[in-house]
Amino acid sequence: MTLHIIACQVFYREVSFLASQSSCTTTITWMPQGMHNTPELLQKALQLEIEKLDQAYESGTLRQVPNALVLCYGLCSYGVAGLSSRHFPLALPRTDDCIGIFLGSQQRYLREFEKHPGSLWLTNGWFETDAVPAEKDPAAIRAKYAEEYGEENADFLLEQDQAWIFHYHACSYITSPAYRKNASFQERARALAQRNHWDFYTFNGDNSLLFRLLNGEFPEDEILLCPPGAKIFPSFDEKKVCWKAEKA
Amino acid sequence: MDQKELLAEISSWLQKGRMPKVKEMVTQALDEGISAKDILEEGLLDGMSVIGEKFKNNEVFVPEVLIAARAMNGGVEILKPYLVEAGVETKGTVVIGTVKGDLHDIGKNLVKMMMEGKGLNVIDLGVDVSPEQFVATAKENNADIISCSALLTTTMGEMKNVVDLVKADPELNGKVKVMIGGAPVTEAYCQKIGADCYTSDAASASDAALAFCQGA
Image (cartoon, rainbow over the protein chains, first blue to last red):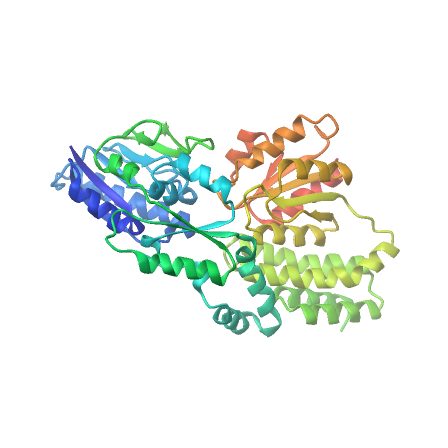
């Protein structure tokens, strides 16, 4: 079986490792981390990658014709809504976001989320690919607000910007089996928790969901398989995503 | 400066998010004998609707809307005693909060400020509000609307629990409207859970809330 993987850079090491061990032949497209903040752009960028593969297939220039396109994403602020391929099934984990994938299952994520609702989840991939929100210096943020919106608004905007930090209770750090050594990221996460007076938890990462995805195993309860020509939609229930046939 | 110019000036300072200036000009307008109702509608709300429109068109972003809403509230605070004196009554009561498990309140705060600007009495339950708290507070205060906000797809499911609890309560069913909003919320979701109203931004939320209260 051949799979083409379209993955968020946050999974760089996990996906690279699992792809190297996969029973499938894999090709891959990496997408920048952090696009969940602009879900419309994420959707367009993902559809563009799918379109490239569809067009390459149509023109006979696709060297490795995949049996499926594997999306290493969750619902991700609806960044996956509306995705469609003319020629390939799309495989997508039924998770809210990458946390469920890093934890190995959506169920585990929901269990932990319920225990610690106000928790900032951090992974090694996040530390490696992007700025961590609560690590930004408040004084620098305030200075930027003062410059753009005036001194009289700076404190108010900073307060609004940082309110979530006061409401949150914890930092939940997920280890990764794909990293040989990740103590420095764990320490950064712990320091962040201390600085914000949060509790600190460490969870063992679990690559089993990613393993199945990258080995072409798509159990219906865990992974959506959207047939060619159909579109992905949010299902607004515990299954997270569904597909619907495109109207003719 | 005649009345029209003065009110246009208030609107303009509000659009720039300059609360101290707005407060100063509102006081000046009152001193010059302009009615509190005119200052509110042709000065403050006029400015806010310009900002609301620009936000919808992606011409301004959340910080601009926040500081404009804050400037509006600064002006409304000064006007309040005059509005009461003039017999302008509260137009309705809204219970607002972020749903259980959701601790992100910028959007909710914005909606609250916009609703207050429209003359609605807003009871803010803050963040992480259970369906039971929404319902109990709505009953205690004889509210017209429960307004729920969520930022995460993980937590938005709680909105259905609020809707179900309201529908199961003979005292509230059909009387209290449930409005929902927040980044992951859509019209399709609103219909799926049977909520009364979804709006995509704070300005539309305050318009819809006012329409509910006046129409009911």
